[in-house]
Image 1 (cartoon, rainbow, N blue to C red):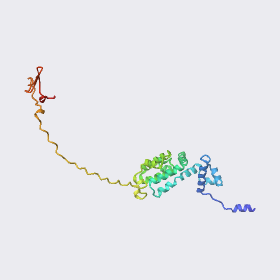
Image 2 (tube, rainbow, N blue to C red):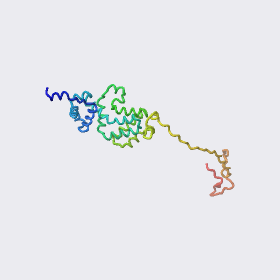
Image 3 (cartoon, one colour):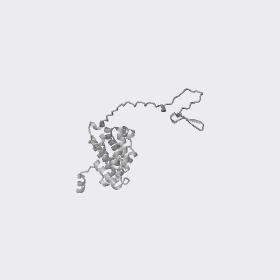
Image 4 (cartoon, rainbow, N blue to C red):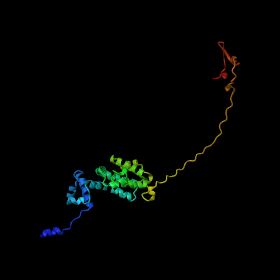
Length: 257
């Protein structure tokens, strides 16, 4: 056996780790794009055999799904550490705007097919096509504000960040309750319970009852006598004046019917 063969046999074998493969995949994706990122290309970057990658990952789809979801892992970590919903939402917004292509690719890959059918069935029909990292973020919010509110807030944030809205506009549209904002409770038992609204002091209302005014006494000029109907013509008062042979009553005796 030659000296070269002896050195080859005794040389230590370098074992690739999952983290090394994922790092090379991420680098290839950002430098080459989705189409050019292949298992063979990743193996070339790592200077290893293609089979070494298949020992850890099923295919390119699984590799890219994990790589694109890793970008949002800091949001999950912030959630787990007790950060408020508002602060984790702002971090989410910052990450998505820094890598929008990876964000869109993550959802596209999730729609192409589930990586774990059993996990998707356990998650329920409403989560079956969401990336796992998104489920974890929404579940973290749901533990504090309920599932319905958490899903509504995430949907609003997801839509607005894709439209390019700034963080303040996204937070305002989410309509977070007071206890979920940055100034609210970050963790503990109180974080999942809405804060009691501040008591509002109602002004005292004082109602003063006054006596209604007494009716005014009727004057003779304003009093109209309603006599019984008669076939006799009405008498003209003494104060009437005669004009062209017709009797005209004085203004004091005119009755407006």
